[in-house]
Image (cartoon, rainbow, N blue to C red; front, side, top):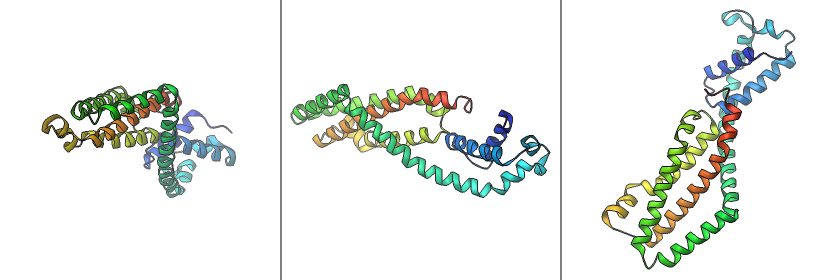
Length: 221
């Protein structure tokens, strides 16, 4: 017998109550548990009826609590690396697009030809572009990432994005460019790579926003 929305909600609330935080993982677990109950329990209405710990459903879930938490830990680790690989592969695909490839080549040639001759100007230009790009992507994704922070995919994206911020915003780099006047040609290419990577990362993430919002709109209010 197919479970009702209310019964499925009870499964979701139980998992949330025992610490299954990430909604995308919980979503899969709810679906798996619901299928198990539908296949193995003849009278699902009676299975969910009752009060307190005498409810068959509660007894069933408590008996498997440890297994659920262990599965969640494994899924969290697995999905972290899976999503990381997926995001990096998508970034590589984006880099191969003609318009992006052309932009990367032009920027690289610009830094190569002018970087050694105009180290100060090129450093300021590339570093400022990186900072502005980070601020822009942070601004347009802030509300979304805050609302969907309980999705493992969004958490992985935020993790990768935060690594990029370390490059330009650590104090030595920032003060060297805008305060001490210390410029190095090698740093230009570090900032350039960070700029390109962040631009492609934001492209990849923004494309997935609509899909994420549609898939989880009933679970995230």
